[in-house]
Amino acid sequence: MTSPVLLLGQTLGFTDNPFRTEPETAARYEQRGAVLVTDGKIADLGTADDLRARHPQARVIDYGAGLITAGFVDAHVHYPQTAIIASWGKRLIDWLNRYTFPEEMRFGDPDYAAEIARRYFDLTLSYGTTTVCSYATIHPESVNAFFTEARARGLRALAGKTCMDRNAPDGLCDTPQSAYDDSKALLEQWHGVDRLSYVVTPRFSPTSTPEQLEAIGALWAEHPTCLMQTHLSEQIDEIEWVKSLYPEARDYLDTYERFGLLGENGVYGHAIHLEGRERARLRETGAGLVHCPTSNTFIGSGLFDMDGLMAEGQRIGLATDTGGGSSFSMLRTMASAYEIAQLRGRALHTAELYWLATQGSAEVLRLDDKIGNLAIGMEADLVVLNLASTPAIKQRHAEADTIWDALFPTIMMGDDRAVQSVWVGGVNRLARGD
Ligand SMILES: [Zn+2]
Image (cartoon, rainbow, N blue to C red; front, side, top):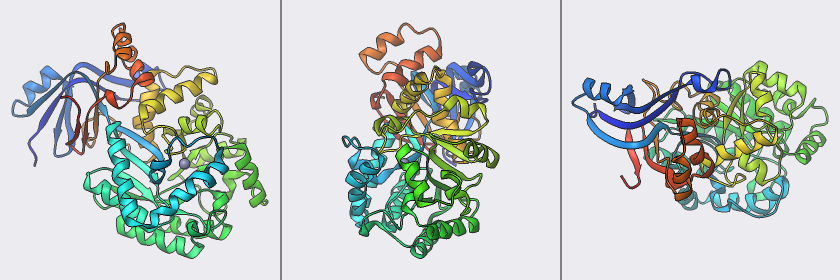
């Protein structure tokens, strides 16, 4: 039993999905709120006055006007691409060949993998992200480095060995059998250890043979409570390529479905250019979609249909997709989601953006009973935001009348300077100027 800590500030959580109701009624906001953290969990919530009275023994940390919320949940990243983020001038297939694959070759070296894992988690924590779901490389060393570093920091984290057995350089291909064997061994080693989860991870149909997808499908069938993550319908050229590689498939999603790689624990990155049958099957199975807006604009992929997919009842989370995405920051990612929705004719509400970056992503990762919201019983993964972190934001913030108006400039213009403090499992992991 650790001694309780009482965090004071503005507090914001959700009682509902703001896409499914009036956005502002889906939130629970206190201007002078409090969060009681005990044994790594949120033990009580309410107004500062009430919680001070109820828990007089608790150590108090007062964040003043800081906004306390759930930490950000980034539902689709490639931590091995940390060092090549913001590489110029290529579209998806060229970008993979020119930048990504040469860098991923380096992760057979456990020392290099460990160095990048440390660098990656330093960065994500500095941006207030407390959970990521990552692709590793084909090398088991890359998975071990990721989980070792996440575990040392007490993070809830997810990852899997990326499986590829064609259309990649020689040093970056496994086989159907080795993909199965290595993934299985890593799953058995790491899944459920502390706060870690293994994710079955075929990169995408073009870099796997049908035989490999079949082997990975068999592994997932043996471990159906694990997530399975992959990419789906990101660019038009890619979709044409998939159709030429799998001429018998009905559509891109079918290249997964026919090998048992579609299900309620499936997580599909991008999902931009979906056909009608694909949308129907994704909804029927309850699969999760992950919107990666900075990546979609950076690589020129297209405009995700947030409104249409939400209206159909799809499950949707938000992600940076580093390093195809151009930022480690979920604030920047929310801003990009706002801009993409605007290009489709709809201004997403601040509550909708924030929900996507926290609870929406947690739902897609099937972790919404543990993380992604400020609610009693949830794990105490928290971010405290300074809503006036730069001169430009501060002068705009001064004009705000509501929490939504106060938060929106930080979403649009904020960076790591807005992240005042980060708590991971009830432990303070970052404190900036407090
Ligand atoms: Zn990706």
